Every structure is written in C-alpha cells, then in structure tokens.
Image 1 (cartoon, rainbow, N blue to C red):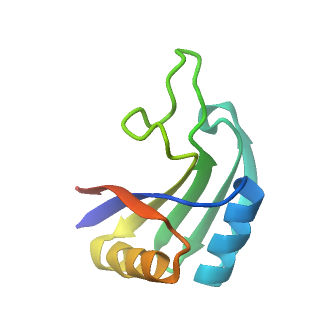
Image 2: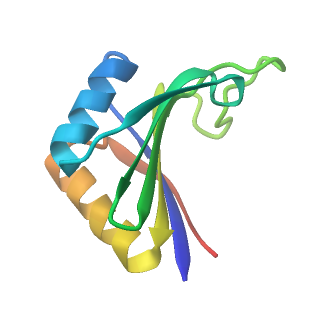
Image 3: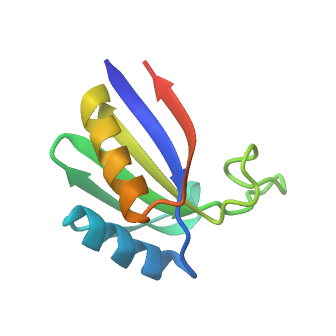
Length: 107
C-alpha cells in the first residue's frame, strides 16, 4: 500500500527548512517554481519515497494551502510505500527535522 504523511517543519524560512531536511535525510532537495505550490518549493527522493517541501501559502481564496493547519508555516509531504514512509517519518520526528505529523493517509 501507499502512504502520504504531512509534517510541519520548524524553521525560519524555506531555505533553512531545506538545509535541515537535506542534512537529516542525506538527500538533495531540488528547487522548483510553481504557482500551484506557492512559488518556490523543493522536491527530492529518498529511495522510492518522494519528498515535497513548500510554504503553507495563502491562496487566492484567502485560505492557506492546508486549511486544517493554518499555523503550520512550512509543510513537508512524504509519499511512497507505506513502510518506507513510516521509516522516514520516524527519522524526521526523532531527529527534530520535522516538528509534527499533521496528517497520514493510506491508499
């Protein structure tokens, strides 16, 4: 089964969050630009798991991207095989790279 976890990242800005995640996961997050993701955002992989780091930006409707978590400034999506996502989540939380698990979906 596949799983997607959403984490909040405690950092002062997107660049600091990128450095934190890269050092924690020993992987590279590549910069991208997209209005859909609020401008600059970062994507990367750890084995078969996709990582996406972005701001919880306010969209045209005046709501943040993740309306259920308006206080989370920086978001990290981790998507892939269930066991791999769980393992990466454990690393992120135990190392302090991710502040909090906000949501977990299995599909």
